[in-house]
Image (cartoon, rainbow, N blue to C red; front, side):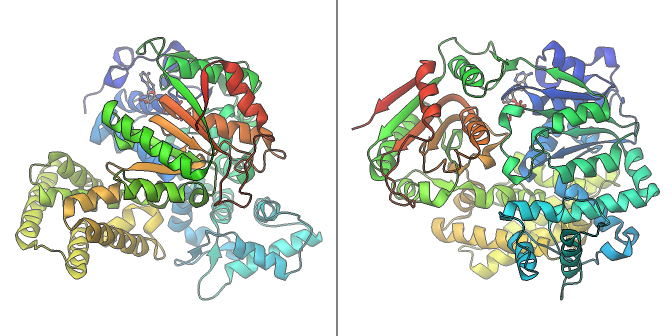
Length: 613
Ligand SMILES: Nc1ncnc2c1ncn2[C@@H]1O[C@H](COP(=O)(O)OP(=O)(O)OP(=O)(O)O)[C@@H](O)[C@H]1O
């Protein structure tokens, strides 16, 4: 890799950075970038990674650690860095979620965990908090009124658990029950993070190893950081020479219900003496939508910041519609008609459109998804597959299959080879060339053996052979999340099952793979899942009291949720209100509790509100 002098470095891909962004990209100080939607915060992290690696400011062999909240966000950031500064440099860029980073530390250094909290190799991760809640219930602990309070209480304290109050004794007992459960120990991700923190607090060598490995630490979507995550970050890196860059937006703080720390920006600035830096451009949304976001920022969120649209747009671009409909039945048909027209006339692809709901996806749009699919527009609940299809090994399998059916598909081969190369970071160029040749021969052999139709058995065997070529042990040892337990085999079985299902529908492999990956399919998801993403058109279904049932108790967070939905759109955003919604608990819908959202849209004079007869 050719080294670039810092003063000769330019942002990758010809992008222009505003002055503040460029200052952060090249800075050697701790910074907190606070900026609105579409300001390029994630892009700034990608550009900073390129700067640090290409100029060797992050000196070889030290690395950059980027921590995100969701698998797909970690994946997207890693991909952006790879595209911007190439395969070789990006090997020193580790992009993980908080959860997988903590798990990796625990798995790697499990013998160093103090005895009372030690985990064996095959612990089970509890995803559903109910198991924890039930244990407290069994201990007749009723001093918390909500499950959320109880779950927060469970990991509120750093380990080891101390204190002699009743609550502490119960907490200790529940932790013990979980860590001695048979046949496997049980831990939630926040528990795992507390254990990782304990490991670091009690093992200076592990701490030193982390700090020497990662000279630069990035924190994406910092507004969503929980107390447990922040404590873990501090144990790992505070007061070390590592340089921190956090980016976030307090207008997009929608995870307070899940424990996001409201004062995290302030604490970070104090703890790390970071500078707070603002950005002013919005690269994502067209000018009319930026204007609407600015209006709502001031009048709904009571914040002073204003964004400036990028110059690539014409001043009158951007549209916001609110459609008031009579029934859910009318809503699905009207939306179908509109979406069909956009797909035909506006050169918009299904993947450029996103349907969002606040929650209860099935109740709000289950019927609509069915109706779209029955009438020729693919749409699906993306939440089911979003994590799986961004897993590296899944991308490898699918691209190997695309390459199998089309030997001219160079992109598919490149992506598959990239995965294989990453599993063998110790390889020299010559060995990589041999691997390339071996992979070509392997796929050529598969092509020769490939028979149609693919029975379930043949499909299973085909996928298994592709995985075996990469080597299950190698995959497991490379990806911390797969090292222990049965996560890998479970995910692999899910991949096989999904591809077989799509194959049963389409009868040929290409559309089956496209179906699995969601090509030509409108993604449908909750606003929470849509964070960090962007679409040409966003349709928010259910601007109603029923969907915002918690508005009276958490108005600020719900206003931010509404703002996040709106700000995912590049050119068009639509809100629907339906007078009746039979699939929900209260079929008659009103606009009383959330009147302020509706009124502010109206007052903005940008939203076009229409009653649809
Ligand atoms: N300097 C730039 N020049 C041109 N386009 C940019 C620049 N920075 C970001 N973009 C583009 O703007 C869009 C938004 O960028 P990005 O996702 O980084 O914003 P963000 O601040 O993280 O957004 P959000 O907080 O809303 O998720 C992306 O399409 C990105 O490619």
